[in-house]
Image (cartoon, rainbow, N blue to C red; front, side, top):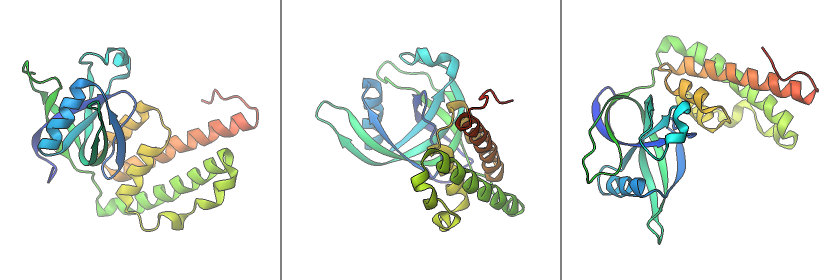
Length: 225
């Protein structure tokens, strides 16, 4: 996958709870026959797979072709291990967000879905940088407070210097993927074009989690409004 803002065909790997972001890696275990075939074809070709989430209300239709969210993330297979029974363990690295433009008809000899997608860039304009830096600072502060509540012994490990060498976009996307957020929350973050907006939304979600957790620890009402 090279430059964004282009239409390309990509095999689709629908999942219920994993949302991949650009610049972040995800280990995956491939066991269904259709996705074994998808992985084998990807390894023999461009090594690209399109991760996309199944709409929550159709999660019980995973065995078929459930409706998908229109936005996903292309990933490049960095490493793959073929197991004795034909399953795969792979490491997928997010490259570009994409929007599904058209799902291609499936011929009888192809088990998995393929779509034509528009590759999308993460937008970071110079004017956005001050707001992004403020949101980044808030995310680190809120995350540190969450760790202090949930794992006090490690609270001192979370500080600004820990992330000093991490690019703003990679920082934002890594937190979006690795934090324990609801799949729909992660999907909303993925669909946000501007990195500064995504980081600010992430800070809002963390503020809510912190308030919820603080209320739980103090014995208060968790039904916050």
